[in-house]
Image (cartoon, rainbow, N blue to C red):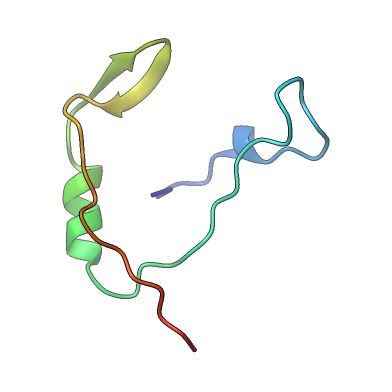
Length: 66
Protein backbone atom coordinates (compact mmCIF):
# COMPACT_ATOMS: atom_id res chain seq x y z
CA UNK A 1 0.00 0.00 0.00
CA UNK A 2 1.50 3.32 -1.05
CA UNK A 3 0.25 6.10 1.24
CA UNK A 4 2.60 8.88 0.09
CA UNK A 5 3.98 10.35 -3.13
CA UNK A 6 7.26 8.55 -3.78
CA UNK A 7 8.93 10.33 -6.69
CA UNK A 8 11.81 7.86 -6.73
CA UNK A 9 9.33 5.25 -8.01
CA UNK A 10 8.26 7.43 -10.97
CA UNK A 11 10.61 6.15 -13.65
CA UNK A 12 10.37 7.98 -16.99
CA UNK A 13 12.77 5.57 -18.72
CA UNK A 14 14.06 2.08 -18.01
CA UNK A 15 16.62 1.84 -15.23
CA UNK A 16 19.29 -0.82 -14.89
CA UNK A 17 16.67 -2.96 -13.17
CA UNK A 18 13.77 -2.30 -15.53
CA UNK A 19 10.92 0.19 -15.28
CA UNK A 20 10.38 0.15 -11.52
CA UNK A 21 7.06 -0.30 -9.76
CA UNK A 22 3.38 0.14 -10.59
CA UNK A 23 0.94 1.34 -7.95
CA UNK A 24 -2.64 0.50 -8.77
CA UNK A 25 -5.90 -0.04 -7.00
CA UNK A 26 -7.91 1.95 -4.50
CA UNK A 27 -9.00 1.35 -0.94
CA UNK A 28 -12.79 1.78 -0.93
CA UNK A 29 -13.44 0.42 2.55
CA UNK A 30 -11.18 -0.12 5.53
CA UNK A 31 -9.00 2.99 5.63
CA UNK A 32 -8.93 2.53 9.40
CA UNK A 33 -6.92 -0.65 8.77
CA UNK A 34 -4.60 1.20 6.36
CA UNK A 35 -4.04 3.89 8.98
CA UNK A 36 -3.22 1.26 11.62
CA UNK A 37 -0.69 -0.30 9.24
CA UNK A 38 0.74 3.14 8.48
CA UNK A 39 1.15 3.80 12.21
CA UNK A 40 3.32 0.74 12.88
CA UNK A 41 6.97 1.24 13.87
CA UNK A 42 9.51 0.93 11.06
CA UNK A 43 13.15 -0.08 10.79
CA UNK A 44 15.86 -0.85 8.23
CA UNK A 45 15.99 -4.37 6.79
CA UNK A 46 18.26 -5.80 4.10
CA UNK A 47 19.33 -2.31 3.04
CA UNK A 48 15.77 -0.96 2.77
CA UNK A 49 14.77 1.92 5.05
CA UNK A 50 11.41 2.61 6.66
CA UNK A 51 9.97 -0.90 6.41
CA UNK A 52 7.64 -2.30 9.07
CA UNK A 53 9.53 -3.63 12.10
CA UNK A 54 7.06 -6.54 12.33
CA UNK A 55 5.64 -8.40 9.34
CA UNK A 56 2.26 -7.12 8.17
CA UNK A 57 0.05 -9.67 6.41
CA UNK A 58 -2.95 -8.71 4.29
CA UNK A 59 -5.27 -11.68 4.69
CA UNK A 60 -7.83 -10.73 2.04
CA UNK A 61 -8.43 -8.33 -0.81
CA UNK A 62 -11.20 -8.17 -3.39
CA UNK A 63 -11.66 -6.94 -6.93
CA UNK A 64 -14.84 -4.88 -7.15
CA UNK A 65 -16.33 -4.53 -10.62
CA UNK A 66 -17.69 -1.13 -11.68
